[in-house]
Image 1 (cartoon, rainbow, N blue to C red):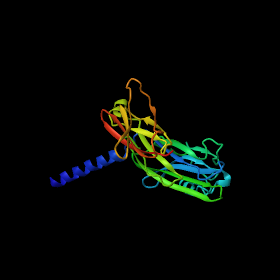
Image 2: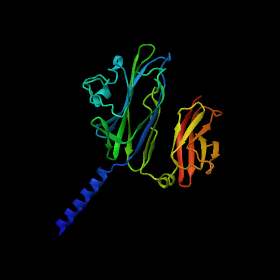
Image 3: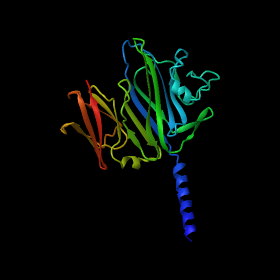
Image 4: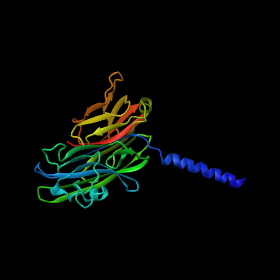
Length: 286
């Protein structure tokens, strides 16, 4: 009898493990970040690649790759992960670099779109690559988005940033503002939003927003992910420096808060709805 009970427990545990392991929540992941130009003049060039890996380091999909034949050795980390036949980051015939469903183009300059520097936004649909086509939704779990960026400044000094940020893909929405790796790569915001969430699922949660740019010279944009009833801004002494109530009959998804009248420093955005309060720290730098 005792042996039978143990066997049943093992079966139940294996069944639970199978359910968790193979959950495949559909949704959209977005990363936004800012890469300011390191030096003048404005014509400084930039190459970069963005890709997704799972927690084990297995390549999932390229999301962006901007490079030219003259700079094709500037993205060695991505080239190794994307299955390129050699260190060249150009998807030439026979090199087999995986760029399915990715944003691609030549080396970025100040006159190209997207421009070499400034705000960038990348999205992922939660799917992998099968052959040469967009594949299927991957299993839920921890994933990493990698960014490799290389440039040469006006003094012919080479610079490179290779960094990653972890997030959890699953049935729960996630909003992250990780620490930036350098002064030339900042204001990082990660958002995972499951499509399985209905209107009631999104509304019945504490306020979720994306605030940008950070730092800002005065005006902050607020993208609302669910209902927000009011917002207050506090300085680090706990004093209220801004307050506004939102009209529920005038629903918009983006709002602007102008704090240009305040002194430089860190401030706390406190947003409230009927389910609670969410706080976000921002930087004002004029």
